[in-house]
Image (cartoon, rainbow, N blue to C red; front, side, top):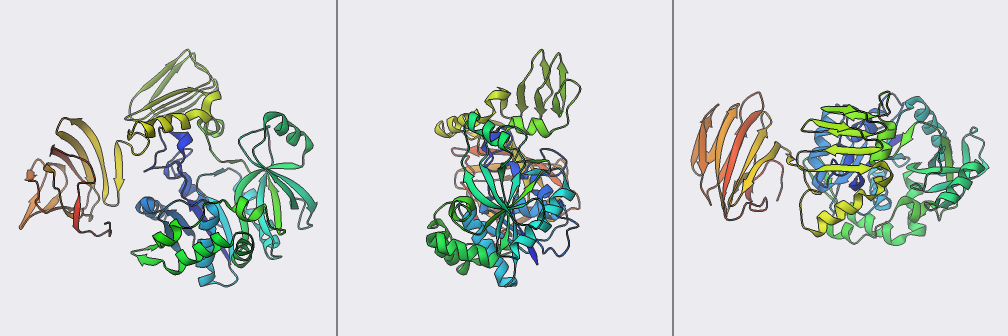
Length: 471
């Protein structure tokens, strides 16, 4: 049986300010009403004999991924939590161990969670060809037919035809991201294809080749899997073992070393959406070549990508720009500099700011909170708690909290008291008092929280009980 493996641990820094550490690009709705993560799963619908997906994600994104799975009515075979990012080779190894525990003959379809594929039927056809090769113990990658001399992708040169169909080849060599002249030569030759980072192989064959070529990664991943624990619906890898695992990609660790590499060449409307300019290219455009999203007005503007998330944006008399507005940051950039967004993210890190880490709205398993105002010794937040959900039983050493219910029905535990609060009612939580907030209604609970104290950081939380087993 075919086991899809969804790798969703990327950070997507080149799509700042929309993509951030706490909400990276794979969990954002960039090209449709579904997120890229959801689109990756939905495009597998209808393919026969496919198991439930194995989802590999960062521990910090576990509830985000679970919520998005639930929203598209998908129950994963397993949701594997990485305590730290270690690139794709260890992640695929963990998935291979997990699949083998279910099925000794398991074949993996390894997919990044942040790609776009527009030709679903063509994609399914390519998977079938790859399966035939995988049955012959080949490690199969998908080579994308290039339509421009791109320098942002690695390339694969095809070797001898393998006879499954006209799209199946051995791999002659992998080539790192080339300069422009080399990329032009590759495009003209017709023998080179973009490296998509998607794979099909038997779990057993991948593990055999990983053990042969990168014994250190194999052993560390095996240890992390064997010492993993189950928590709610999650599989938690052993933190110490996984942290000791070298970080490397499937390409570097295995594909460039093995003698079993094969390729299926495809032209399926693929994009890795690796920058704002590439997102603009795959977005719907008006007669002037503009891709517009949100509350946007343009005049005498051409070939631009303009996205408004929280406010109206007007673009007048400009061309070839990317303009992205969020509640706490605005990006204005010429399309030619799309790869340089990472320098802004690096600046934010060095300046110890938070705009690369979180949005003003921060999602939690119980709902979300978003900042409204902040000043000396106070900050105000808007909180939404989903029906039937509750926050942890907690206490703060440095801040007091005032809650005002805007709409919904709240159950508040405050020390030994239990209060029922409804619209326009409020309560006060002193410093050092145990408390808990719960939505006992059938609609979302909204309230305003005003914090006051000498320290207002999110790490000033001592949890005593928590439905989500957070420390």
